[in-house]
Amino acid sequence: MSISDISVIEIDQLLDAHWHWLRDKTTVMEIGQWIEITTPYLDRHNDAIQLYVRRDDGGYLISDDGSTIADLASSGVNLETPKRRALLDIAIQGFGVSLDCDRLEVLATEETFPLKKQSLIQAVLAVGDLFYLSEPSVASLFVEDVQAWLDEQNIRYIPNIPFVGKSGYSHHFNFAIPKSKNAPERILRALAKPDKQSAGLLIFDWLDVRDSRQGTKAYALLSDVERGVPAGVIDALRSYEIQPIAWSQKDSVRQELVA
Image (cartoon, rainbow, N blue to C red; front, side, top):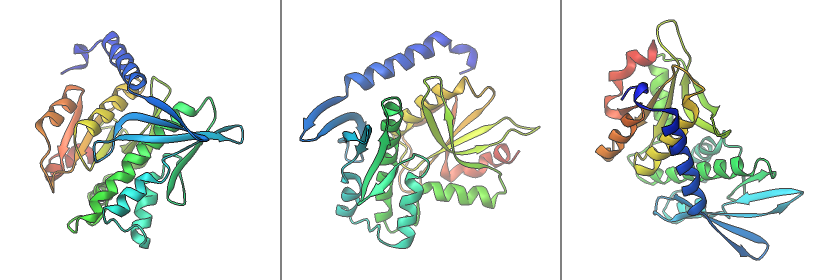
């Protein structure tokens, strides 16, 4: 699909539809001094991600109440080793999220509340991916594997870079390869669990930032070592001009990325 096949009106309609979906599928409930927010985003159990909010020093404290790390612990993921604790820090860095007694937390003002809430959801999803450390065949997070490969191939990059989109929200991509005289800017996101949800989040982020990154090409690196990538995920990414790259086929795009 070429850029000429998509109109600004169509993209505006897609963004509007996302906002309506997000609001319609979000519920709130008062629980003591906290307000429980049930979001439409799903964790690895396909349960809705829940956040908790209370007033804090004139602003708001938003927390996952420790449920994300508690779930990992109950699944046999030991995060107490120095290496795995470091991986946990990598998973939440860049989102502005802090860790307090295994609770993922973020402070927000009235103006920054939507952005901070979204950042916490992204951090919850990223930490949830650490579940795959419970499988002996997985030595590290997929994003670390991607970074190691980029280093091995002498592909220059900027790690964990945020771009502000049309909505005013900031969207993080794992790597950005600067523009050169031979190639445009390229941005990459590593999907350790390429499914409908992770692809949908990437598509939304890309649609939101694309207009401000003229000429930029987007890539999705898809982990297919333990399980295949659903055809629907690949088709969806291609429909929005995101080039899907199965990890097993990564060498096929080396020249594009090194240029």
